[in-house]
Length: 357
View 1 (tube, rainbow, N blue to C red):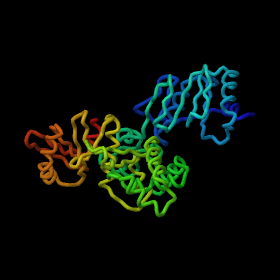
View 2 (cartoon, rainbow, N blue to C red):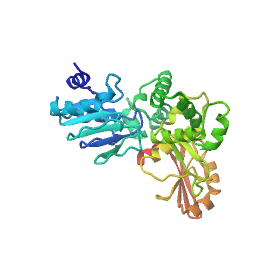
View 3 (cartoon, one colour):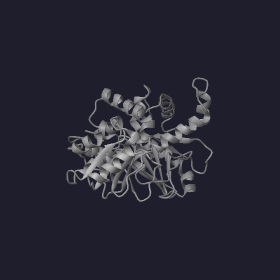
View 4 (cartoon, rainbow, N blue to C red):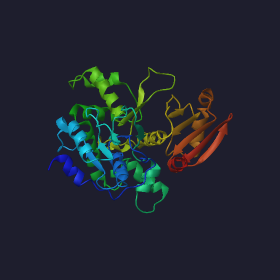
């Protein structure tokens, strides 16, 4: 029995699908998202609505498949079995797609576009989805603590601390596959929520690694294309180093023994902003400036409201320059507010802010 015949006769089963905020509606859809975001689950959920024997599902990461002959084999197999759908997980453009059959594809290459395909972006869990994945009733503050420690991967929601670190490290190794890329990712991740000069990093690493400047910059572009890492520019300062944010904020804890909750909290807030805002900047005063929404946010998790408002007073001139009439201060449990010179300040717990968006 050949490989395609075996996969056709015994398609994968998926019994524990959690509803997501996105869903595949039609064939000829390209599902894009980072590794571990749930792209396979979306494909299998769609396939579960089809008649048995009408489709074929394959993953290009399945080592049992002969990639040298796969393109020709798929075309003839789909024709011979009169399939109505072909689903290809972990698709790469090196595979020639068969003609005349509807397709579902998934990839973690954010830069991939295919003519005639609807692109469906599926990210790892936001806070609201994490709550839906978590079992049992709990307070919002407790759920936030779980989210902050477990991160955004659907698979991590039920893992213990030791299992979580192994899972995150293993996923990164499988995604990057090159030891040098893993080393470079770790060094960049250590700058979580901080501006990072790639030139300075190159200067620091060059004496210790066989590394070119092009390979370092290429690695940063790869991390961004795979949605592992995001680089946020400073507003009106294109030559200033960009801030580094991880798509899964918990990943840094699996790469170092250093703990920095303040930086992780800022990264958590950034991940929520990803849902709705294409243009995100930082300034010398605020953590996040959203020019299209005319919003500004700062992350101050533990400072008492009266001290936050005192700090707010020193920001007013800068906020007025940006045209901001309201500053949102994200906290861990604190609430409050104030106003100065026509600018409002609202202090709100992260979980209330995230669930209202």
